[in-house]
Length: 253
Ligand SMILES: NC(=O)c1ccc[n+]([C@@H]2O[C@H](COP(=O)([O-])OP(=O)(O)OC[C@H]3O[C@@H](n4cnc5c(N)ncnc54)[C@H](O)[C@@H]3O)[C@@H](O)[C@H]2O)c1
Image (cartoon, rainbow, N blue to C red):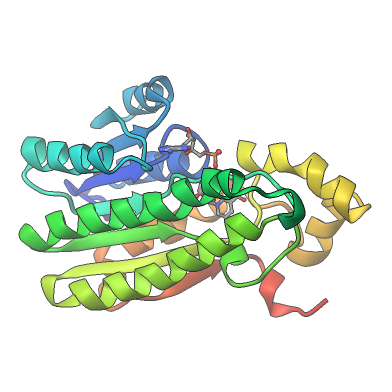
């Protein structure tokens, strides 16, 4: 059976676990050749080995040469890049009062600089080989401010806006660029942040989740959108931000 992404060449940064891993597996199921990239080479290797046509590449998205080598290597091996998911991200809750410039940069260097580098090199490669689809992994925090995530939310807002500019600049080259804005999903990133959120909020995080989004999300809740945006089914969508939040942002309280 032919998949929605049959024989497409897809790269996912931060593909070693969490959302990136789930997207890698979904793209694999849809017939893509999947390049799993992560700063954690062992994690990328383990994920790639579980795919039918997976490859692992170590890449630190903060490092320009590393991202360029990732994209150049894929073009050298496969002749093109069709799909790029700029997914690598980090975060840890911290109030602005405690946030030094060095702390700010720990998050923004991955979540915004890294997305910029991934989008730029992927878009240039796609423009040279007939086009493609890029997904910037933003978050609902890019659409709302929130205590303890000033660096993270600012970076995600930057991702949403950067995707718009890239979409416009590369539209005539057949490159689409969209942002995904998931709400809280059950990954290591979120589990590690919960104790700090609970201490600051003074209420169980489960209660906030239940009120705002009904239940905790799972990576599988956002995978279908990542497949849609990578595929031809979204061919007339570019420069858009797609919210996946089970209604969180629909309500003021
Ligand atoms: N989990 C959520 O609720 C949620 C919600 C909205 C958006 N997001 C975003 O989705 C993306 C993935 O989140 P997740 O929950 O799967 O996180 P995660 O922590 O489970 O996985 C992140 C992956 O990125 C890799 N990584 C970290 N720094 C890197 C770097 N410098 N270069 C390359 N790889 C690096 C890690 O090794 C890890 O494999 C992030 O951009 C995150 O901000 C997550």
